[in-house]
Length: 604
Image 1 (cartoon, one colour):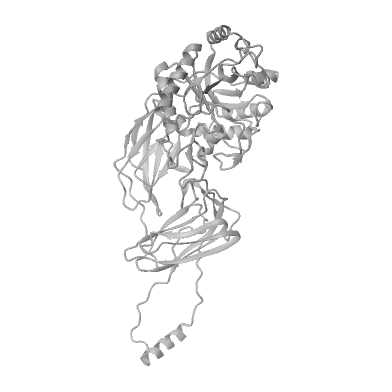
Image 2 (cartoon, rainbow, N blue to C red):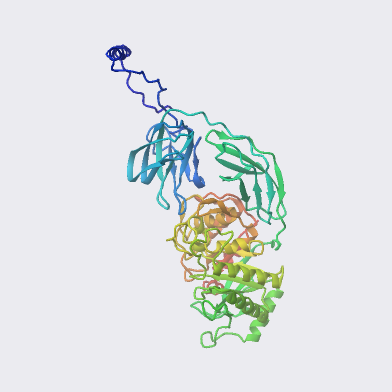
């Protein structure tokens, strides 16, 4: 739709007579050369053709049919914690020329601006526009400027904004040409879950799109990308296109590359994981190891705790007789562990918990952690280790902004310690993790203290640990309880207690997501057999208890794409590993409701 306002026509005869009179009187010495009328240079400034011509950071923008300022469409863009939802378009202009930029906007903290002007880049904004408000600014291009970038954006972490009828009036420049297809595409740096790509720059390109087996998987501004979330020992075909405001180039020549093999073979079947209060009673009472029902496939001994927060020295002791009058002897406890293992169960030591803060701030603490945990595993004949670091155990230092290459000592030392333990005990070593949503899924919006500081440094702090151990990780069971509302991949907030929350949180782990909204930093998807859903066994066990019917709906949706609610998953995963609960004791206290519901579920 052409939205340019044309000036009223003037009388050509009056203009001619006036010019002739002035010239005759000597008042006009030289007639200036005529310029073409200024026109609106924006492509699809009314968003009637969707986002054609526009590029929005982290897929933050989308066309909507309401509200609109005029026509049938407008732009709606939603900022995130580290993304201001900028939507931009590169426009051809002429050097040494004056332009007027205008847009109608609605929302809070909405910006309109132009960059690359060659002189002084400009922007204007409104703090609050509850109804449509027009923003206008102007600029002059530099002596060699042939294009500028026009943009709108909101502010980090605020609500969505709308924009419509974006215009840039002034003399038009040479039309932008669609770039050529990229050349020199090459693959390198393959891991079991990622492949690096690079290619030669293309003249006139402002961005590049990466395709895997014909499907778009990434958009980047530079000439390299790392494609993540891949399966081990699998071959993939990659192509790249170049883009600018005129459109997208043809695809490059195809390059085929394969991932390496994973170090831990995927387990088979489904599993029920439970924590056993072995070192304390809690309100649920003590349960002897021999009395743990056969329903439980993985038994996590709660908890091994440090002698001090930063010592790295982990100790585990059975509950005292004074607290747990029915506690068995140490010999009986160890014998019961062997009996469970003989029946095919895995028994692990869980480190941390609510009260066991573990901060490996030094390499000495790291080494002590390895030796003390090894002693527990050896003394009790255990199958492996569960990491249940909560509270302030993990936090990212300011400036540590890339989960793929962390620099914070408590993160780096924990990764090194777990790799050492894995190498020591070999391929049969079971490694599981039980982070809270704050440390994992919240990383979709916020990571650490953020690019400017001020955020909670614990946001997403488990992500570098999970990422570094992804090939050794047996099972991740995020605690879908004691959680605030968390944004899912649908950019909507989900609250615990119902199936939608568990579906959305699990979908993020099985799909992967951009960390802090940055598509160049994608947290890769985990295998379905590496993921279980963490739930409280009863209302007494934790906030966010979910009834059996809602748990069944969750499993139906994730494994069969049936019985789903409002949230739409990005796949179907019949190989989802299973469920985890806090705790075996609370489930027995509640009549075994949780484990009975799991046993009754028809996985196939």
